[in-house]
Image (cartoon, rainbow over all chains, first blue to last red; front, side, top):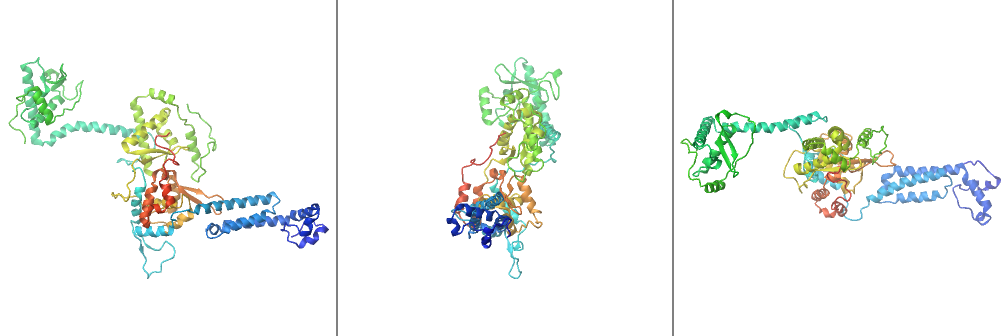
Amino acid sequence: MKRARSGDEEDPRQNASPAQPQSDGDSSGSGCGLSSADMQHKEDSPGTRREIRSKYRELILSVQKNREDMLSASNNKLTEVLEKANKLFQDVRQPREAALDAQLLVVTTDLGNEKASQLSAEGASFDSVAFTEHLLSYMGLKRLTNGEDGQQNGAAFGYLPQDAWQKVAQRAENCFRAAPSFHYMMGSFHAEPPPPKQRIERQRKAPTKEVKRMMPTQLKKMGDSHQEATEKEVERILGYLKKYYQDDPTSPILYYEFVIDPNSFSRTVENIFHTSFLIRDGLARMHLDSDRLPCIAPVEEGEVEAGGSSIRKQCIVSISPKLWKEIKEAYDIRNPLIQPSNMQPE
Amino acid sequence: MMSHRKKPSNAHGSSQSTSNAGPTATQEEEDDATFTQPSTMQVQKGLEKLTPAQVDQKTAEVVQYFLVKDQKKIPIRRADLVKHVVKEYRNIYPEIMKRAARTFDQVFGLKMVEIDPKNHLYILINKLEPVTGASPITNPTNPKLGLLFVILSVIFMKGGVVRESVVWKILKNLGVDIGEKHEEFGDSKKVVIEEFVRQRYLEYVRIPHTEPVEHQFRWGQRAEVEVSKPNILLFMGALHGQEPQSWSQQYQEAHRAPNSSQSGTSSQR
C-alpha cells in the first residue's frame, strides 16, 4: 500500500498495520496535536480507505451468499458479522465507507428480521417434512419397492394414484367459503350489454307461455277419452247455469251455491274445475254482489268473446274439505244445483 | 358530474407495490378515477327520475355480471362494473349496490365482499359456514384446489409468510416439480404465481435486497375472507394425529376475533 503523502516523520510507522486506529503508547501521552495529525495522515490514505471499503463489501457479500447458513438458529454467524462490522466502523471516516456500512446494516437487519420470525415461542413446531410425509400417505402414495433404486429427492419416490390431488381437493373444500360457480345452461357470456338484456326478456316471456299452456295439458292428461267427457261436462254445467239464470234473471246465483255438492267433496272440486272453463272461455262471468259474495252468471249470447276479452282478471279458487263443510252449513245447501251426471270417472 | 382528467401516470399510486401491478393497472385506476361516489342527495334525485322497474333491471344486470365473473374467481373491479354494466345509472350506484347485495344475501345465500377498499375490488363468498370434516357430497372438485390448499396451509402453519423456495421444495416432495410439466397442473409455477395470485388467493411479493431475486408468499385478500383457519387446523390435526390445540400459536391466530384485520363487509361501495 502506497501512500500519496509521506513525510519523514511517518516513515517509521510504514510497517505498522495501517488499520490500527489505536495510537501507540508513547504518542498518546504526548501532545495530541502531533499524534492526531499523524493518525489523520495515515488514515486518510486512499489505500486505507479502499481496504475498509473492501472489507465491508466482503461482509455484505458473505451475508448474501450464506443466507441460509446465517438464518439457521443453530449458530451465531449473523452476530459475528455484526461484531466485525462494529470493529470496522471505528475506522470509518468518509461518507463512502459509511454508506457501505449502512448497506450492510440493511442487509443484516433483513436477515435478523427473518430469523426472528422463524422463532416460535411456544407450541408445537410445524415440520414441513412430516407434513409432506403424512399428506403423501393420505393421498395414497405407493412407494417404490426395495428393488428399485429410488432417487433421493421427492420426485420419483413412488406413484401417486390418479385421483390423489382430487382427493386432497375434496377434503380441502370444507375449508373454503367459496361461492358455488354459477353457470347458465345457455351459451357463454360477453361483457357487452346486449346479450344480458336479451336473456332477461326471454326468461320473462317463458313463464307466461307456460301458464297458457297449462290448461290444454291439463285436459290432455285426462286422456283423449276423457277430453270429450270434460267438454260434455262443461256443456252440461253451462246448461244448468243458463237454466237457473233464466228461472230468475234478476236474482244472482251465488257461486258457492252453484258449485258445491253437499253430498260429495270430490264432485264439488270437479264442479269448480269445470266451471272455470266457462269463465275462461267467456261463457260465464263472475262478480261480487253487494255482500261481496261471488256470484256467477252466464254471458249473453251476443256478448260472448272467446279468448281474450277487454277486462280479464284471474283468480284462484281453493277449497278444502273443512271449507266445504263450513260453506255447506253457512249456505244451508241441501241439494246440489249441479246434478251429478251418470258417467262420473272413478 | 364526472371530471375528465388527462391520463396521469400513477397519480393515484397503487396501494401496494406488489408484483401484481401490470401495465393495465394504471388504466383501471384511471377509469375508476372518473367515477366519483355520488352523494345521498344525488342518489335520491337520481332515483326520482327512474321507474322501479328500471332500477330493478339494472340491479339484476349487476347481479348477473357478478355471478358470471365469479365463475373464474377473478375479483370484480368497480371500474369495470361501472363502465360495462352500470353506465348511465352511475349516479345511483350506491343504491344499486345495496340492492344487489341484498339479492345475493337473500336469493343466493352469498356475501358480496369488498376485499380491497382502496382499489375497489369485490368478490362473492358463501354465506354458509363450511361443514367440518369431509363433505358428504362428492362432487368432482378441481384438483387445483388441493394444490392451493397445501400452499395456504403451509403459509398459515409457518406464521403467515413463507419464502418461495420453501414452497417449491414442499411441492417437489409432493411430486409437483415447477421445473417440469405436471400431469394435472401443467405449468404448476404459472398456476401458483399467476392464477392463484390473480384470484387473490395468494400474494407473491419480492423480498427486498435479495440477489438473485426471491419472493415471499402470503395469503391473498380473497383467502383472508374465504378460507377457514380453524378448519385448516382441524385437517392438520387429523393428518398428523395431533390435537389442533397443540399448535398453540396457530390455534390462537385461527380463533382470533374476526374483522380485526379483515377488510370490507358486504354492501360496501
